[in-house]
Amino acid sequence: MGAGAIGSFLAEKLSMERQDVVVIESDAGVAARAQAQIDCLVITGNGASSETLKQAGIEHADLLIAVSSSDAVNVLACAAGERLDIPFKVARVEDPLLKAEVEALGVDLVIDPGAAAARELVALASGGEVAEMVQFAGGELVLIGAFVPEDAEFVGKTLADLKESVVGWDWLVVAVIRGRETMIARGETMLEVGDHVLMMARKGSTKEAYEWLGLSSAPAEKVIVLGGTRLARLTAGMLSERRIHTTIIDSDMDRCQLIATKYPKVVTVCGSPTDPKLLEEENVGSADTVMALTGWDGENVLGALVSKSLGAREVIARFSNPELMGIGSRIGIDATVSSRLSAANEILRFVRRGAIYSVATFSDSDAEAIELEVGPNSDAVGKTLAELKLPKSMIIGGMQRGKEVFVPRGNTRIEIGDHVIAIALPEAIKAAENLSG
Image 1 (tube, rainbow, N blue to C red):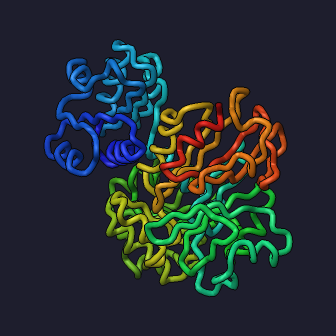
Image 2: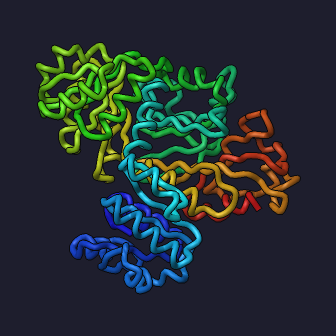
Image 3: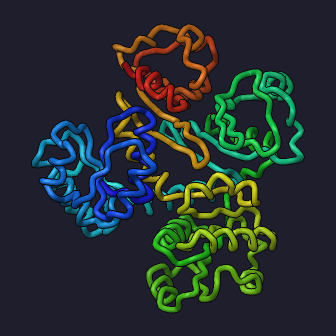
Protein backbone atom coordinates (compact mmCIF):
# COMPACT_ATOMS: atom_id res chain seq x y z
CA MET A 1 0.00 0.00 0.00
CA GLY A 2 1.51 3.24 -1.26
CA ALA A 3 3.32 3.60 -4.60
CA GLY A 4 5.81 6.23 -3.49
CA ALA A 5 9.60 5.75 -3.52
CA ILE A 6 9.56 2.84 -1.05
CA GLY A 7 6.42 1.09 -2.25
CA SER A 8 7.28 1.26 -5.95
CA PHE A 9 10.85 0.05 -5.29
CA LEU A 10 9.63 -2.96 -3.32
CA ALA A 11 6.85 -3.76 -5.79
CA GLU A 12 9.26 -3.68 -8.74
CA LYS A 13 11.87 -5.78 -6.94
CA LEU A 14 9.39 -8.43 -5.82
CA SER A 15 7.68 -8.49 -9.20
CA MET A 16 11.04 -9.19 -10.88
CA GLU A 17 11.32 -12.24 -8.62
CA ARG A 18 7.91 -13.41 -9.89
CA GLN A 19 6.14 -12.75 -6.62
CA ASP A 20 2.42 -12.05 -6.98
CA VAL A 21 2.23 -8.34 -6.11
CA VAL A 22 -0.74 -5.98 -5.81
CA VAL A 23 -0.22 -2.24 -5.22
CA ILE A 24 -2.89 0.04 -3.71
CA GLU A 25 -2.42 3.79 -4.29
CA SER A 26 -4.90 6.57 -3.49
CA ASP A 27 -3.50 9.09 -6.01
CA ALA A 28 -4.76 8.25 -9.51
CA GLY A 29 -1.75 9.86 -11.24
CA VAL A 30 0.78 8.01 -9.10
CA ALA A 31 -1.19 4.78 -9.58
CA ALA A 32 -1.12 5.21 -13.36
CA ARG A 33 2.67 5.72 -13.38
CA ALA A 34 3.15 2.66 -11.19
CA GLN A 35 0.98 0.55 -13.50
CA ALA A 36 3.00 1.68 -16.52
CA GLN A 37 6.37 0.91 -14.89
CA ILE A 38 5.79 -2.19 -12.75
CA ASP A 39 4.60 -5.62 -13.84
CA CYS A 40 1.87 -6.00 -11.21
CA LEU A 41 -1.77 -5.17 -10.53
CA VAL A 42 -2.30 -1.57 -9.35
CA ILE A 43 -5.58 -0.55 -7.69
CA THR A 44 -6.57 3.07 -7.13
CA GLY A 45 -8.22 3.40 -3.73
CA ASN A 46 -7.90 3.82 0.02
CA GLY A 47 -5.65 1.11 1.46
CA ALA A 48 -7.16 1.56 4.92
CA SER A 49 -10.55 0.44 3.60
CA SER A 50 -11.49 -3.20 4.09
CA GLU A 51 -13.43 -3.08 0.81
CA THR A 52 -10.36 -1.92 -1.11
CA LEU A 53 -8.24 -4.60 0.55
CA LYS A 54 -10.80 -7.24 -0.42
CA GLN A 55 -10.77 -5.91 -3.99
CA ALA A 56 -7.01 -6.41 -3.99
CA GLY A 57 -7.48 -10.06 -3.02
CA ILE A 58 -6.25 -9.64 0.52
CA GLU A 59 -7.62 -13.04 1.59
CA HIS A 60 -4.81 -14.65 -0.46
CA ALA A 61 -2.02 -12.39 0.81
CA ASP A 62 0.92 -13.56 2.91
CA LEU A 63 2.12 -10.04 3.69
CA LEU A 64 0.73 -6.51 3.80
CA ILE A 65 3.27 -3.68 3.47
CA ALA A 66 1.75 -0.27 4.28
CA VAL A 67 4.26 2.41 3.27
CA SER A 68 2.15 5.38 2.23
CA SER A 69 3.18 8.88 3.36
CA SER A 70 0.52 8.86 6.11
CA ASP A 71 1.37 7.14 9.41
CA ALA A 72 -2.30 6.98 10.40
CA VAL A 73 -3.42 5.39 7.12
CA ASN A 74 -0.62 2.82 7.34
CA VAL A 75 -1.65 1.81 10.85
CA LEU A 76 -5.34 1.67 9.90
CA ALA A 77 -4.52 -0.50 6.89
CA CYS A 78 -2.62 -2.95 9.10
CA ALA A 79 -5.49 -2.97 11.61
CA ALA A 80 -7.85 -3.84 8.74
CA GLY A 81 -5.39 -6.52 7.65
CA GLU A 82 -5.43 -7.95 11.18
CA ARG A 83 -9.22 -8.25 11.04
CA LEU A 84 -8.87 -10.02 7.69
CA ASP A 85 -6.29 -12.49 9.09
CA ILE A 86 -3.24 -11.44 7.04
CA PRO A 87 -0.28 -13.41 8.50
CA PHE A 88 2.25 -10.53 8.51
CA LYS A 89 1.79 -6.77 8.47
CA VAL A 90 4.41 -4.02 8.09
CA ALA A 91 3.73 -0.32 8.65
CA ARG A 92 5.81 2.76 7.98
CA VAL A 93 5.43 5.01 11.05
CA GLU A 94 7.57 8.09 11.76
CA ASP A 95 5.58 9.69 14.58
CA PRO A 96 7.31 8.58 17.84
CA LEU A 97 4.08 8.99 19.82
CA LEU A 98 2.18 6.73 17.43
CA LYS A 99 4.89 4.05 17.39
CA ALA A 100 4.19 3.12 21.00
CA GLU A 101 0.56 2.33 20.14
CA VAL A 102 1.13 0.45 16.92
CA GLU A 103 2.00 -3.08 18.06
CA ALA A 104 -1.28 -3.36 19.99
CA LEU A 105 -3.09 -2.82 16.67
CA GLY A 106 -1.68 -5.97 15.10
CA VAL A 107 1.40 -4.61 13.31
CA ASP A 108 4.25 -7.14 13.16
CA LEU A 109 7.00 -4.75 12.03
CA VAL A 110 7.18 -0.98 12.39
CA ILE A 111 9.73 0.79 10.21
CA ASP A 112 10.96 4.37 10.24
CA PRO A 113 12.86 4.95 6.96
CA GLY A 114 14.41 8.19 8.23
CA ALA A 115 15.77 6.61 11.40
CA ALA A 116 17.08 3.62 9.42
CA ALA A 117 18.87 5.92 6.96
CA ALA A 118 20.30 7.96 9.84
CA ARG A 119 21.78 4.80 11.40
CA GLU A 120 23.29 3.94 8.02
CA LEU A 121 24.86 7.41 7.76
CA VAL A 122 26.36 7.14 11.25
CA ALA A 123 27.84 3.74 10.32
CA LEU A 124 29.39 5.28 7.19
CA ALA A 125 30.90 8.14 9.20
CA SER A 126 32.28 5.68 11.74
CA GLY A 127 33.66 3.35 9.07
CA GLY A 128 36.12 5.54 7.19
CA GLU A 129 36.12 6.23 3.45
CA VAL A 130 33.69 3.61 2.17
CA ALA A 131 30.55 3.64 0.04
CA GLU A 132 28.84 0.95 2.15
CA MET A 133 29.32 -0.47 5.61
CA VAL A 134 26.90 -3.29 6.49
CA GLN A 135 27.27 -5.40 9.61
CA PHE A 136 26.33 -9.07 9.87
CA ALA A 137 26.69 -11.76 12.55
CA GLY A 138 26.14 -9.27 15.35
CA GLY A 139 28.74 -6.90 13.93
CA GLU A 140 31.51 -9.53 13.76
CA LEU A 141 31.38 -9.67 9.95
CA VAL A 142 31.41 -6.51 7.82
CA LEU A 143 30.47 -5.99 4.19
CA ILE A 144 32.48 -3.07 2.78
CA GLY A 145 31.71 -1.29 -0.47
CA ALA A 146 34.21 0.99 -2.23
CA PHE A 147 35.11 2.28 -5.69
CA VAL A 148 38.40 1.36 -7.37
CA PRO A 149 40.54 4.54 -7.63
CA GLU A 150 42.52 5.51 -10.73
CA ASP A 151 45.89 4.97 -9.06
CA ALA A 152 45.08 1.49 -7.70
CA GLU A 153 47.98 -0.89 -8.35
CA PHE A 154 45.68 -3.88 -8.78
CA VAL A 155 43.77 -2.55 -11.81
CA GLY A 156 43.92 -5.05 -14.66
CA LYS A 157 44.73 -8.00 -12.41
CA THR A 158 42.48 -10.93 -11.62
CA LEU A 159 41.34 -11.64 -8.07
CA ALA A 160 43.22 -14.95 -8.16
CA ASP A 161 46.47 -13.12 -8.98
CA LEU A 162 45.82 -10.56 -6.27
CA LYS A 163 45.18 -13.19 -3.64
CA GLU A 164 48.57 -14.72 -4.39
CA SER A 165 50.39 -11.39 -4.30
CA VAL A 166 48.82 -9.77 -1.20
CA VAL A 167 50.34 -10.78 2.14
CA GLY A 168 47.76 -11.38 4.88
CA TRP A 169 44.76 -11.63 2.54
CA ASP A 170 41.92 -12.33 4.98
CA TRP A 171 38.82 -11.05 3.22
CA LEU A 172 36.71 -11.98 0.22
CA VAL A 173 35.64 -9.88 -2.75
CA VAL A 174 32.06 -11.05 -3.27
CA ALA A 175 30.77 -8.83 -6.11
CA VAL A 176 31.89 -6.25 -8.64
CA ILE A 177 29.42 -3.67 -9.93
CA ARG A 178 30.45 -2.15 -13.26
CA GLY A 179 27.99 0.37 -14.68
CA ARG A 180 24.61 -1.39 -14.61
CA GLU A 181 26.08 -4.90 -14.49
CA THR A 182 26.66 -6.82 -11.26
CA MET A 183 29.13 -9.70 -11.36
CA ILE A 184 29.47 -12.23 -8.56
CA ALA A 185 33.23 -12.30 -8.04
CA ARG A 186 35.31 -15.31 -9.13
CA GLY A 187 39.05 -15.94 -9.34
CA GLU A 188 39.11 -14.87 -12.98
CA THR A 189 37.31 -11.56 -12.30
CA MET A 190 39.50 -8.63 -13.35
CA LEU A 191 39.14 -5.23 -11.67
CA GLU A 192 38.88 -1.93 -13.55
CA VAL A 193 39.03 1.73 -12.54
CA GLY A 194 35.64 2.89 -11.22
CA ASP A 195 34.42 -0.60 -10.34
CA HIS A 196 32.19 -0.73 -7.26
CA VAL A 197 33.71 -3.54 -5.21
CA LEU A 198 31.86 -5.35 -2.40
CA MET A 199 34.00 -7.34 0.02
CA MET A 200 33.38 -9.32 3.19
CA ALA A 201 35.81 -9.27 6.11
CA ARG A 202 35.96 -10.13 9.78
CA LYS A 203 35.63 -7.07 12.00
CA GLY A 204 39.29 -7.26 12.98
CA SER A 205 40.55 -7.57 9.40
CA THR A 206 39.03 -4.50 7.81
CA LYS A 207 42.16 -2.34 8.16
CA GLU A 208 44.06 -4.49 5.64
CA ALA A 209 41.13 -4.38 3.22
CA TYR A 210 41.04 -0.57 3.45
CA GLU A 211 44.78 -0.35 2.82
CA TRP A 212 44.42 -2.59 -0.22
CA LEU A 213 41.82 -0.18 -1.61
CA GLY A 214 43.93 2.86 -0.71
CA LEU A 215 41.31 4.20 1.70
CA SER A 216 41.48 5.54 5.25
CA SER A 217 39.79 3.44 7.92
CA ALA A 218 39.88 6.26 10.47
CA PRO A 219 36.40 7.15 11.80
CA ALA A 220 35.14 10.69 11.34
CA GLU A 221 35.84 13.16 14.14
CA LYS A 222 34.29 16.19 12.45
CA VAL A 223 31.08 16.03 10.37
CA ILE A 224 29.20 18.82 8.61
CA VAL A 225 25.55 18.16 7.75
CA LEU A 226 23.98 20.21 4.94
CA GLY A 227 20.23 20.74 5.35
CA GLY A 228 17.77 20.69 8.24
CA THR A 229 15.42 17.92 7.11
CA ARG A 230 14.19 15.28 9.55
CA LEU A 231 16.90 12.92 8.27
CA ALA A 232 19.54 15.62 8.79
CA ARG A 233 18.33 16.31 12.34
CA LEU A 234 18.18 12.64 13.30
CA THR A 235 21.66 12.02 11.89
CA ALA A 236 23.19 15.08 13.55
CA GLY A 237 21.67 14.05 16.87
CA MET A 238 23.05 10.50 16.62
CA LEU A 239 26.51 11.79 15.63
CA SER A 240 26.65 14.21 18.56
CA GLU A 241 25.65 11.41 20.95
CA ARG A 242 28.80 9.60 19.79
CA ARG A 243 30.82 12.70 20.65
CA ILE A 244 31.54 13.46 17.00
CA HIS A 245 31.87 17.21 16.44
CA THR A 246 28.82 17.98 14.30
CA THR A 247 27.73 21.14 12.50
CA ILE A 248 24.40 21.48 10.68
CA ILE A 249 23.81 24.19 8.06
CA ASP A 250 20.30 25.17 6.94
CA SER A 251 18.81 28.28 5.35
CA ASP A 252 15.55 28.34 7.35
CA MET A 253 15.88 30.46 10.50
CA ASP A 254 12.92 28.88 12.32
CA ARG A 255 14.23 25.40 11.64
CA CYS A 256 17.71 26.41 12.83
CA GLN A 257 16.25 27.65 16.11
CA LEU A 258 14.37 24.36 16.51
CA ILE A 259 17.55 22.36 15.88
CA ALA A 260 19.61 24.49 18.27
CA THR A 261 17.01 23.96 21.01
CA LYS A 262 16.54 20.23 20.51
CA TYR A 263 20.18 19.37 19.82
CA PRO A 264 22.32 21.67 21.99
CA LYS A 265 25.49 19.66 21.30
CA VAL A 266 25.16 20.32 17.54
CA VAL A 267 26.57 23.57 16.16
CA THR A 268 23.78 25.17 14.13
CA VAL A 269 24.57 27.63 11.32
CA CYS A 270 21.86 29.51 9.43
CA GLY A 271 22.74 30.00 5.77
CA SER A 272 22.67 28.38 2.35
CA PRO A 273 24.13 24.84 2.46
CA THR A 274 25.43 25.29 -1.11
CA ASP A 275 27.12 28.69 -0.62
CA PRO A 276 30.88 28.19 -1.25
CA LYS A 277 31.78 31.26 0.81
CA LEU A 278 29.78 30.07 3.83
CA LEU A 279 31.14 26.53 3.55
CA GLU A 280 34.68 27.91 3.41
CA GLU A 281 33.98 30.08 6.47
CA GLU A 282 32.80 26.97 8.31
CA ASN A 283 36.09 25.31 7.36
CA VAL A 284 34.44 22.49 5.41
CA GLY A 285 37.87 21.54 4.07
CA SER A 286 38.84 20.21 7.50
CA ALA A 287 35.75 18.00 7.76
CA ASP A 288 36.22 14.25 7.72
CA THR A 289 32.71 13.78 6.32
CA VAL A 290 30.17 16.11 4.75
CA MET A 291 26.59 14.82 4.46
CA ALA A 292 24.31 16.59 1.98
CA LEU A 293 20.85 15.79 3.36
CA THR A 294 18.54 18.54 2.10
CA GLY A 295 15.18 17.64 0.59
CA TRP A 296 16.35 18.39 -2.97
CA ASP A 297 18.59 16.10 -5.01
CA GLY A 298 20.08 18.99 -6.98
CA GLU A 299 21.03 20.85 -3.80
CA ASN A 300 22.63 17.73 -2.41
CA VAL A 301 24.73 17.20 -5.53
CA LEU A 302 25.87 20.83 -5.53
CA GLY A 303 26.57 20.93 -1.78
CA ALA A 304 28.54 17.69 -1.90
CA LEU A 305 30.64 18.74 -4.89
CA VAL A 306 31.39 22.20 -3.49
CA SER A 307 32.45 20.59 -0.20
CA LYS A 308 34.68 18.11 -2.04
CA SER A 309 36.33 20.91 -4.02
CA LEU A 310 37.06 22.73 -0.76
CA GLY A 311 38.92 19.72 0.62
CA ALA A 312 36.40 17.57 2.55
CA ARG A 313 37.77 14.03 2.95
CA GLU A 314 34.49 12.26 2.19
CA VAL A 315 31.16 13.51 0.88
CA ILE A 316 27.86 11.65 1.14
CA ALA A 317 24.62 12.69 -0.62
CA ARG A 318 21.02 11.75 -0.06
CA PHE A 319 19.02 11.05 -3.23
CA SER A 320 15.30 10.57 -3.77
CA ASN A 321 15.67 9.80 -7.48
CA PRO A 322 17.01 6.23 -7.72
CA GLU A 323 18.56 6.94 -11.13
CA LEU A 324 20.94 9.45 -9.55
CA MET A 325 22.28 7.05 -6.92
CA GLY A 326 24.18 4.95 -9.41
CA ILE A 327 26.10 7.88 -10.90
CA GLY A 328 27.26 9.47 -7.64
CA SER A 329 30.75 7.94 -7.80
CA ARG A 330 31.26 9.12 -11.37
CA ILE A 331 30.87 12.76 -10.40
CA GLY A 332 32.97 12.70 -7.24
CA ILE A 333 30.46 11.72 -4.55
CA ASP A 334 31.91 9.04 -2.28
CA ALA A 335 28.68 7.48 -1.00
CA THR A 336 24.93 7.85 -1.37
CA VAL A 337 22.03 7.10 0.92
CA SER A 338 18.33 6.59 0.32
CA SER A 339 15.50 6.16 2.80
CA ARG A 340 13.81 3.77 0.38
CA LEU A 341 16.77 1.37 0.43
CA SER A 342 17.06 1.57 4.20
CA ALA A 343 13.37 0.75 4.57
CA ALA A 344 13.55 -2.01 1.96
CA ASN A 345 16.37 -3.73 3.85
CA GLU A 346 14.17 -4.03 6.92
CA ILE A 347 11.06 -5.13 5.03
CA LEU A 348 12.75 -7.72 2.82
CA ARG A 349 13.63 -9.72 5.92
CA PHE A 350 9.89 -10.45 6.22
CA VAL A 351 9.52 -11.26 2.54
CA ARG A 352 12.38 -13.73 2.33
CA ARG A 353 11.53 -17.35 3.16
CA GLY A 354 13.35 -19.18 5.97
CA ALA A 355 15.23 -18.07 9.10
CA ILE A 356 16.38 -14.70 7.78
CA TYR A 357 18.22 -12.35 10.16
CA SER A 358 19.03 -9.41 7.90
CA VAL A 359 18.95 -8.26 4.28
CA ALA A 360 21.00 -5.55 2.56
CA THR A 361 20.38 -4.01 -0.85
CA PHE A 362 22.59 -1.63 -2.84
CA SER A 363 21.99 1.65 -4.62
CA ASP A 364 23.40 0.62 -8.01
CA SER A 365 22.75 -3.11 -8.07
CA ASP A 366 19.89 -5.60 -7.85
CA ALA A 367 22.02 -7.94 -5.71
CA GLU A 368 21.11 -8.70 -2.10
CA ALA A 369 23.18 -9.78 0.88
CA ILE A 370 21.13 -12.12 3.09
CA GLU A 371 22.06 -13.47 6.52
CA LEU A 372 20.25 -16.72 7.29
CA GLU A 373 20.49 -19.69 9.63
CA VAL A 374 20.98 -23.21 8.29
CA GLY A 375 18.24 -25.46 9.64
CA PRO A 376 18.31 -29.23 10.28
CA ASN A 377 16.28 -29.91 7.12
CA SER A 378 18.62 -28.03 4.80
CA ASP A 379 20.13 -30.06 1.95
CA ALA A 380 23.35 -28.09 2.51
CA VAL A 381 24.10 -29.70 5.91
CA GLY A 382 27.27 -31.81 5.79
CA LYS A 383 28.38 -30.54 2.37
CA THR A 384 31.32 -28.31 1.51
CA LEU A 385 30.71 -25.09 -0.43
CA ALA A 386 32.35 -26.73 -3.44
CA GLU A 387 29.96 -29.68 -3.21
CA LEU A 388 26.89 -27.42 -3.02
CA LYS A 389 27.38 -26.33 -6.65
CA LEU A 390 25.83 -22.93 -5.99
CA PRO A 391 24.48 -20.90 -8.92
CA LYS A 392 27.06 -18.63 -10.58
CA SER A 393 24.91 -15.67 -9.58
CA MET A 394 25.42 -16.39 -5.87
CA ILE A 395 28.34 -16.57 -3.42
CA ILE A 396 28.74 -17.30 0.31
CA GLY A 397 30.67 -14.31 1.69
CA GLY A 398 30.84 -15.03 5.42
CA MET A 399 29.82 -17.49 8.12
CA GLN A 400 29.27 -17.59 11.87
CA ARG A 401 29.45 -20.84 13.84
CA GLY A 402 28.75 -20.27 17.51
CA LYS A 403 31.14 -17.52 18.57
CA GLU A 404 33.49 -18.13 15.63
CA VAL A 405 33.21 -15.94 12.51
CA PHE A 406 35.17 -16.47 9.32
CA VAL A 407 35.32 -15.94 5.57
CA PRO A 408 34.69 -19.43 4.12
CA ARG A 409 36.62 -21.30 1.46
CA GLY A 410 35.58 -23.99 -1.00
CA ASN A 411 36.38 -26.76 1.50
CA THR A 412 34.30 -25.18 4.30
CA ARG A 413 31.62 -27.66 5.42
CA ILE A 414 28.09 -26.47 6.34
CA GLU A 415 26.71 -27.42 9.75
CA ILE A 416 23.30 -27.10 11.40
CA GLY A 417 22.92 -23.70 13.05
CA ASP A 418 25.54 -21.96 10.91
CA HIS A 419 24.77 -18.35 10.04
CA VAL A 420 25.51 -17.87 6.36
CA ILE A 421 25.81 -14.54 4.52
CA ALA A 422 24.84 -15.10 0.89
CA ILE A 423 25.21 -12.47 -1.84
CA ALA A 424 22.80 -13.23 -4.66
CA LEU A 425 21.35 -11.75 -7.82
CA PRO A 426 17.53 -11.94 -8.26
CA GLU A 427 17.57 -15.27 -10.09
CA ALA A 428 19.49 -16.88 -7.21
CA ILE A 429 17.43 -15.50 -4.30
CA LYS A 430 15.41 -18.72 -4.04
CA ALA A 431 18.58 -20.81 -3.93
CA ALA A 432 19.86 -18.60 -1.09
CA GLU A 433 16.61 -19.01 0.83
CA ASN A 434 16.78 -22.78 0.38
CA LEU A 435 20.01 -22.91 2.39
CA SER A 436 17.93 -22.43 5.53
CA GLY A 437 15.99 -25.63 4.77
